Image (cartoon, rainbow, N blue to C red; front, side, top):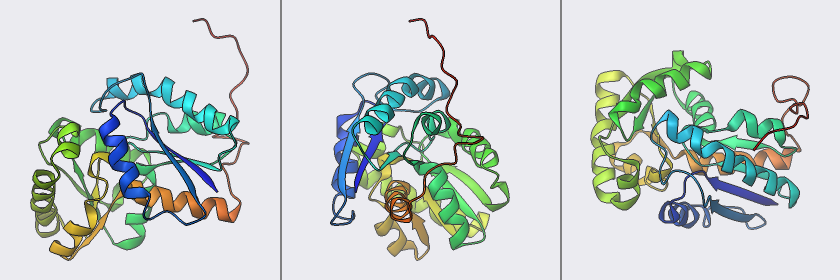
Length: 236
């Protein structure tokens, strides 16, 4: 099968990082393309960044459909443009945030999210609510780092993630930890081993969900929520 993983920012470093982690865990029969955009924000750290990233993300979704891919993963822990992507796609499109929420709810009673920036704590709480999973949320905790730092400084990021994850377990009642940024791809196992609690790497989860959904022959229902948008003229 052929899967396109879209990093919806323009960071080549983060895209390479995601590719390096996903290549060893993909199935032998999965052809994987990990790609970023050439237009848009370097990192996604605000609603403004998300909005700016959506149009080029949708262009890559169209490309994947034209070129015969079997599934798409949007590798940003905000799921930018996810519903719009599903409207225009014949093939399944997975967001790493949504995928990780559902897995976390299956692994424990309550989960905590580690997000890079403090300013995004309330945004993450709202996103959990929009997905209808507020009753599973123990807390959202910040690493007080930029998204770029999570990718560029793994050791510092893992140290802060371990500290905040330990607090989430001890103080918030979390049974599962979600690493809430694609810049933290590949860090979960080390933190999990050290803390002895389940830690979810959303990008790897979404890839494995995508492989399973393709195997099962599923894609999004097109009769309601993800119905194709009506054709119209767009002025540019």
